[in-house]
Image 1: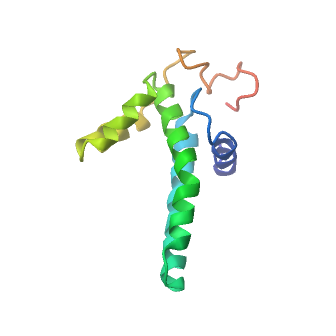
Image 2: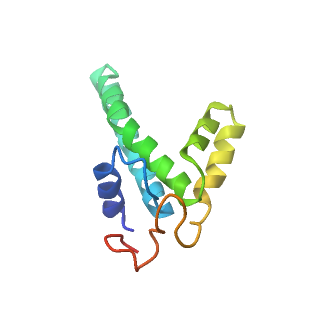
Image 3: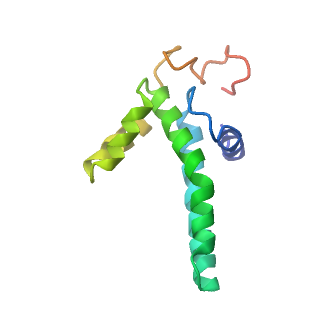
Length: 124
């Protein structure tokens, strides 16, 4: 999945907590989110306020949560594992390990594998 395809996929499914998200989709969106956050912080510094950074952060919070839950689904884990982020240091490390793992092959309880070329409508 390319950078543009990943951003388009995440932003069109910004409230889609069902299904699965490939690693490339998650990490391309993470890069996009980081770049946008950096640019917003730079613009906020120039403007003398933090309004731009707050608006960007609020605009991207739901898509970020949705793609994170779908990424956990791809590794056959419930979206409730996202609550591990509330545990200082260890929770973030555990989630990072989950995010870098490969997809579980074949369909799972959250839907078909997005890597499977036989799945209609999904990009392999």
